Amino acid sequence: MANVAVVGTQWGDEGKGRFVDFLATGADVVVRYQGGNNAGHTVEIGSEQYKLHLVPSGIFNPRTLSILAHGTVIDPVSLAAEMDELAGRGLDMSGLRVSLRAQVVLPHHRALDALGEAARGDADIGTTRRGIGPAYMDKAERSGIRICDLIDDTVFESKLRRVMDEKNRIITRVYDGEPLAVEPILDEYRACAQRIRPYVTDTIWLLHERIEAGDNVLFEGAQGTLLDLDVGTYPYVTSSHPIAGGVCVGAGVGPAAIHSVAGVVKAYTTRVGKGPFVTELLDETGQWIREKGHEYGATTGRPRRCGWLDAVILRFAARVNGLTHLAVSRMDTLGGIDRVKICTGYRRGGVVTDRFPARWEELGQYEPVYEELPGWTDQISDVTRYDELPEAARLYLERIEELTGVPVAMIGVGARRDQAVVRCDLYR
Ligand code: IMO
Ligand code: MG
Image (cartoon, rainbow, N blue to C red):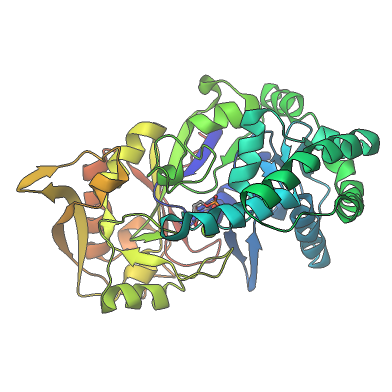
């Protein structure tokens, strides 16, 4: 038995969904430990494509438990809709479990997310407007409503009335917005509570029972290292902890319960939302990558900003997550270019550093120092063994290993579950 964490090393959208889904085939339990429906995990199985926002990627295996742990923030309307959609496509929902302790995302969180962004004007963060930041604010302020409250009609009503009273004052007096009516929220949320109630449990005890029974547990990260509230490009971050340390807080396990940490790396870099991006390509190569990789947000449909791979970021991610392995996605997408580049350092005023800076303003002042490597063909989607990959693709992967000091365990050569080269079993 082994417990594996899969985390994003960049700004999200690294292809975590495809590797988590692949690894989930060997897992007994899959746990989402942070974030909410700001995530968009695309999974392709056979000819079917699924976009998951809240439901863990273990849901495709009927024998796997899929846990939404207490570190997540759950919009019950979104969760119920996602469950209905997946069930409608024939998936079995009986393995889903939702933590009693998870925070509930409410309509005023979504409203305040949008109002806050509008008020920031040019300095907006570019959030998904799913209410994620305001929900985590209420949790930290200790006024949040949890799933255990939601599933108790009386408790929910009294807490909601109290909270809405205050939030409506903020919406109207601070932001000049329209107040939200409580009754429709009560109705809608009660209906969703009804749908979710059978799956709600104390997931801490459940998880520990399964760990003690020797199960393989997979911790599924959403977002990525640079979107982490503490180590990311603050304030252009999300409000949770996608890094490996977030697993302990968000799922309720100690650090020694995590046996390996796989960092998912997209073969190039993308970012949605605002904030500096040193290797961003504003030319036709960036456009080419966006079109070829269909780099449009799975959650908001926004075009993703695209650029070369940045090893400064990867080295930073290797450290703050304690990465034991890398999983590189989209090697097929990057294929077909003559020469590819990797950023190995940042230059400012003639000085080169390989340290990722604390301040986003500083990040914005850096020029990338590139290393050029030969490109490879994009006809690699049928490759199943490492030595079948074109030499240039292997060189690229080996250079990533050298620059990060972390071995590449898995390589994505296509979107489907089976289109991956697997070099080691992470559960061993
Ligand atoms: P997955 O799990 C990419 C970004 C938003 C914005 C910032 C804050 O699919 O990789 P938020 O709504 O979280 O308050 O927005 O974080 N963001 C993501 N970017 N992938 C994601 O998830 C993201 N979730 C949030 O675009 O810049
Ligand atoms: Mg996404």
